[in-house]
Image (cartoon, rainbow, N blue to C red; front, side):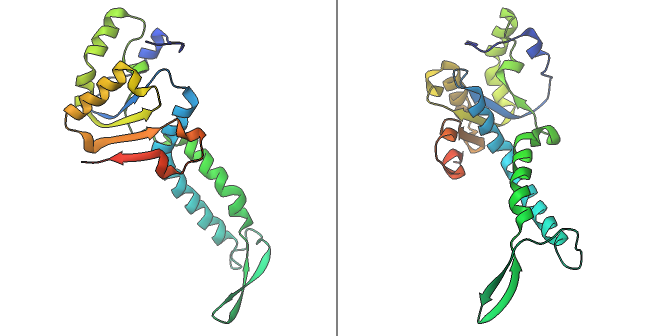
Length: 203
């Protein structure tokens, strides 16, 4: 069921045939859009965002060296270590700019990368043609068989949806539990850590 989500015949034209699918996205249509989007950003973009932030911080640090002198240093302070006193300065540039880099990469990295294929039911199963829709639903197990990883966007309504349960059970039946990534898009609105939100299940 498409629920209150607007679907169009044009959605199906955004998909393309492939020999292998990297990720199969399993989710409940009853869940809100933005929590699922943030969960996907965490799964796909957080690693790149962390790396980009560290690299950018190192570049900013080098640019503040006296030998380079491209950027002014932050507020100076003294550091005492082993009885010795050292001059240091706060990295104001990193404090201000690295979170911005993390946010940009964390939200838009998929547009830069564009190297993975994913099965998204809205686009890979025709939503307006009854015959094509029926054929797509009947082929779900086939899609899963040719998928490398199942990404579960868990919400409280997930196991109340027949097709969500069917997709997960089919994946387990295909003995591919080692390639199951479960992420909760519900806990993103609560006070949690990344380790609470994303877990990789292995045999």
